Image: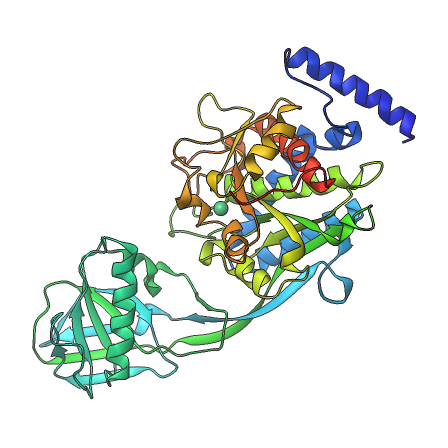
Length: 464
Ligand SMILES: [Zn+2]
């Protein structure tokens, strides 16, 4: 497209916007019409529908389907003309992780010959554990400094805060150091630990050095002294390659090109839940919608006639659902210097607006920097409101998404969402048929117009 055609189209788009949004200040920045045009409902619908299809089986970390999804992201980056920022010029930042899994089949705990209800293993070791005899019953008081040479049993009260969980983990580690050969933990069936145990079917991920953390088994509450018979299976350990997908558009200004904006979203989701009916957690809103935004934004920045002045990097992460693992890995192994990373625009759940919030978008950690306000100025030019959400713009979601590892390293980083905490969150019902594609498309256009002044070096976000 020639520049003149581009201007004509721009004039057309602005004209339409003026009709659609009377009274909105327009044309404060030169928004390339071609960029707005490539962010359209057709491509948004097809992208998110593929990523959230049943064939992707919920994109668990690690899984063959997550690998296929990352290959799709890389193919789209290639098609948009992005440059690979990964290993050997590829789009992949590979990382080998250790995955431990136990099968509950061989798990047995009996007292005086009677089977005790078990809720799975919290951890295991590389050897199976078989024992007959007494188990030392511990109270909160007597367990700290004693030495052991056999299994012990403790009671875990319900967690009232995050600190309760870390206190328990520390206690388990101390018991192990003091010689406990296996730890039996008594819990109520609805205790948070039960969802974390092996019976939930989730493989346990270790990204660092492999460590075998010893047997910890969950059992029903109310168990007392007696003659025990314990049989616990060993963990099976394997490795898997997981990858962040990273592409970039080099800045068009020789000086500003040294600085980068990172636009990101997590590609993984929670996989399969349960074993009857629809078990696939498709993760359409969470977060195929965010990845779709990253891909459409890559298309939009790539067709800018002049190109953005700063470098713009596009990234998808693995392992967000397992504890922000992919983004943490990136900030520990940054490919672009973090001190030259001006901003991280992370995108999470933009497909299912709250009532009355169609075409609107909010950010987390609003008060941490002026970035959301800066972006709201640009977004407004295409009729999208970026606002401070009364409930979600605070600290809680700011710390629980992939922007946070960047923020912890001093990068100005926020997550942008245009969704809701709906009843299908992390459930099989989070499917693409329930998304509002028109709303998504609009919001992505708004994120483009909102990011553009930063990408062109016209504004630089600052901490408040
Ligand atoms: Zn998410």
